[in-house]
Length: 88
Image (tube, rainbow, N blue to C red):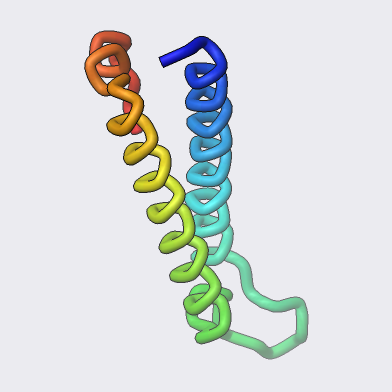
């Protein structure tokens, strides 16, 4: 396990964190925001297209996280990441 592998793991962890935050913030926004058209009483979270896109985004995030963890296990770095206290 080289230093380059550790950099790659670190960069992917940052990207996963940013993506997770974006998903969480959009969920908050969708719960409150309604379209600007006058008279529309629904919020974005009630839209089937929004729900579908959110499900796809969450599935892609989980898939990326699983891929990252498989790389960690393959490189034998699981013990060192556990010592560092990284949370995924």
